[in-house]
Image 1 (tube, rainbow, N blue to C red):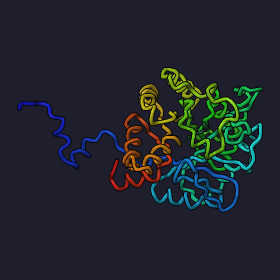
Image 2: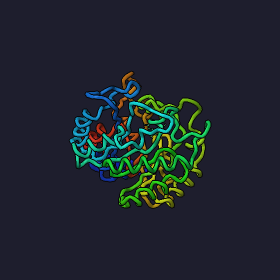
Image 3: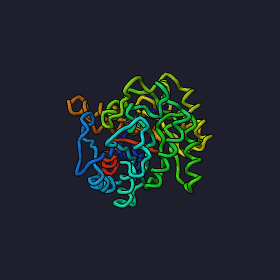
Image 4: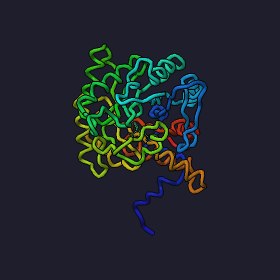
Length: 327
Ligand code: PBG
């Protein structure tokens, strides 16, 4: 048969397939999100996230070293405080859990790049991402607390801060605070395009941060919207964000692509707790090949335009890259 175009010609052998590959994956793009908690000698498995743990500060080092050995060079820290209060004061305390963790991580693994998630929901008794005024989260009041939180993390050793609260104007508020205190070179990765998503369920179990009443829909985005995602991204670029994040990743590849096309700064995507939990649960039940699905999900995020990929699978992915399964 006369066929001029035969796409299969480029799929005939493994060397050729790799030669014509359009998406290349590198370990340097991976960020591992890690939970730290108060207490001593603790390494607790998170029930909804098989294989993921919460570590006390004195046990963090073993995981950090494992990550480094696997070639994962960046970690995002989430603190789980011993006590929560109305004002989320643990978020910006000098000896707060995440501040202690940053100091420890810097000392134990100075080569690791440390990112701080800046939000209040793990620290407030009501579980909302900011300061309440009645039943509402007060946007403008929350900004000063977020800025204080970011500064306290940087003072404790964070190399970058990543606000995930979705208040309006937080990037500018944090930038102003960091600059005023001599940290004009500390980058901000903004969770600019963050949806009100059920994919965060397991995280909220892990951090005990589910809202005590209501939901997060008055600050996180409605997942029906695409143009609004661009609005959020552009506003944060104007406010001085250095990196824009889209979250979740798996069901939001269209937005990763869109933000990538419309901005000129690096784009991160966060494969969140629910994505991890689904893969793990289905693999454990024997319904899917977990490693292959993990690889496919990661490559799809990069194919969509991701430059930086935050994932609980960072260590396993690094191994797959090392072994040439993807890359
Ligand atoms: C804090 C924060 C959340 C996540 C990252 N930062 C929880 C939320 O917004 O409810 C979710 C991460 C995940 O699900 O893996 N606001």
